[in-house]
Amino acid sequence: MTNEAIIPPGGRKFTGGSQGTFENKVVEPSVGKKMRYETDGKLWVPDNPIIPFIEGDGIGVDVTPAMIKVVDAAVEKAYKGKRKIAWMEIYAGEKAKKIYQKDIYGNDTWLPAETVGLIREHIVAIKGPLTTPVGGGIRSLNVSLRQELDLYICLRPVRYFYGVPSPLKNPELTDMVIFRENSEDIYTGIEWKAGSAEADKLMKFLCCEMEVAESKFLCKQGTAHDFSKKCWFGMKFCSFFCSLFCKKGAVHNFLCRALIKKNYVHTFSKECGLGVKFCTKEGTQRLVRAAIQYAIDHDRQSVTLVHKGNIMKFTEGAFKNWGYQLACEEFGASPFEGGAWMKIQNPKNGKDIIIKDVIADAFLQQILLSPEKYDVIACMNLNGDYISDALAAQVGGIGIAPGANIGDKCALFEATHGTAPKYAGQNKANPGSIILSAEMMLRHMDWNEAADLMIKGITNAIKNKTITYDFARFTQDAQERKCSEFADDIIENM
Image: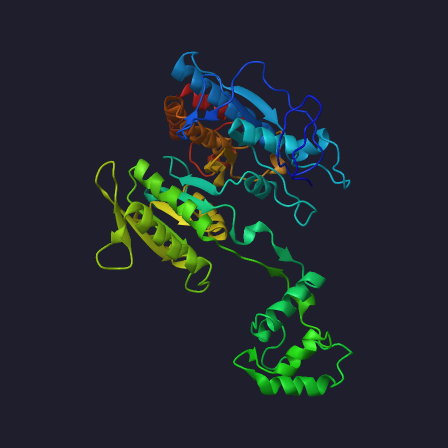
C-alpha cells in the first residue's frame, strides 16, 4: 500500500490510492470536460461532464448499464441534446483484480491508485456494489473509498414510492434523510484480534497505566484468573486472593497489577478482541453542519441527533453535545419550549427548524410507531448503518434505497445493496437503488430537470406494476420485468 505521489512516465499525478504501483489502465473519453469547484466553492458543471463509474461486482454487470441507459435518456429528454454525460469506466473489486498487477507485497489489487485518483480528479462519480470477502485479507472497499477520499457524509434519503410492497400499514409516512458520519466510530478498523500480542499489550496498558477496572479483562466474581506457570503463588492462592479483592466487578489489589506488569500473570487476551471507538469534535460538527444546512435548503422541519450517549458518554454523548453546540454557535439556535431541544429559524422562509436528540434504541422503536415525527437524521457511523437499512426496509428494502458518500472535495454515489452473486448476469436484479442514486447525482450537479424525469419515470413504472421480481413476488397482478426491461419502462414513463 502506498500514500506517496506516483508519477508514471507521461502519466497523471495522483496522491493516495489504496493499492499498488501506478498503472494507467483507464481510457479517458475523447470528448467531455472535467467538473471543477469555483473560487466561491460552487461546483461548475460543463454541458458534457466526464463522470467516472465503477460497474461493480455481482449484479453490477446488470444494474449499472441499466442506470446509464436511464440517465442518458433523462438527460437527452430534458436538455434536447444540449447536455450529455461522457461516461468513463474505472475499476475496483473483482474487475480491478483481473486488470491490474499485484501490489509489491504480492496481494491482488482490489482498489487501484488510479481509481482513487480519477474520482478525486473528476469530483463526481458513481459505482455499483463491490465485494468484500468475509474474513478475507482485504478490508471493505466501500469503507476504503470513503476514508481515502474523506467522504465523511453518508447521505441516505428514504422515501416511499406508491405500489412498492412494504411491511408497514402506512409506509408513505416514512420520509427521512439520514446523515451518517462516515469517517469515525468503530468503522475505522482500529482493532486487534483476540490472542494477539497487540491485544495483550493494550489490555495491560489499560489496566496498569489507565487503571481501567481489571475485571473487564481479568476477573469476574467467582471466576479464576488464567494464570501462567510462572506465577509462584499457585492457582488456588491467586483465585482466593482475587476473590477477596473483587468488589462490584473491579479488582483493587496492587499485587495482581504488579504481576501483570512483570508478565507473571496472563490476561484473558486469548478470549478478548479489542477495538477503538472514537468521535472527534471536528468530525461531529462538520456532519451536523451539513445536516442542518440541508434542512434549511430543503425546507425540512427538524434535525434529530441519534446517539447512545446514555451509555457511551464521552463518544456518543459528545456527539450529541457537540451537535447542539454547533447549532448554537453557527446557526443561532435557542431553547425550544424551555426543554433540552433547540430551534433555529430558517433564513429562507422564517420557519422554525427543531434540533432534537433521541437515544438510538428508542429511535428504532419510534420510526416504526411514529415515523412522521422525524425528518433529517444525524448520527454516528455504526448507528447510521443500522438505521439506514432499517428505514429502507420500511419502504421496500435496500433494492430501491439510494445513497451517496460526500466530502468537501468530491462525491461518490452508489448502489446501497450487496453484490448478490447468485443473480449476477441473469438480467434479473432491481436497478432501482443505483438509478435513484444517479438521480441524486444529477441533483448534486444541479441538473434537476433530468432528475425530475427519472423520478417521474420510476414512480409511474412502479405504479403500473411493471416491476422486477423482488417486488413482483409480493404484488398482486404484477408484470414481472427483467432488469433491462424495468429500465426501459422507466424511460417510457418519463
